[in-house]
Length: 219
Image (tube, rainbow, N blue to C red; front, top):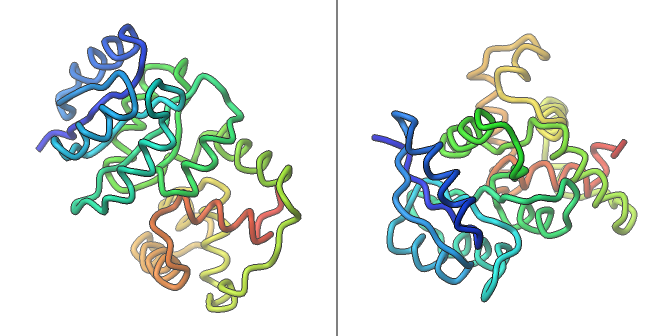
């Protein structure tokens, strides 16, 4: 089955350009679009796409509020939200990651990055590898209150804490497996236990927690 996508952006040229690019991929189908956040929520509920590309700033309802509404709906299977922005440091995007958005992408990213992002997010992963995402989280966390250790981290084994730290540094499961000299399936088991023990939705929330708790020091 192709990956289904809804594109939400108030600029028609952006919707058309992204739509044409994604529709040209054999494994991706653009099933709808929206010119504002309110329509994006309506279309997400109606179409239940795999991924919503969500612009941060839109009229009537901004992308953050629209993402909150979609993620709070608890769709099964889940509708993944990938934020789009023209800014590489944006508090709104940080808040979206905290809500459970699967990552963000700059609008001027190369075409192949957009296609890859949709595939990564649809697969249930978070788009956290790009340096700009780590810089965003580190910068916003630095400007917030001083990081406080989270008691929840005490529930993790030393290996699970290590895995969480590597997730926060933007590593994929295969990269973590290589770093720790273990099988990728072993990493997947550790990741699953980390999410369960910390009540995390996905890797994006794991990154936010790792920075806010001081497990990873911004820099």
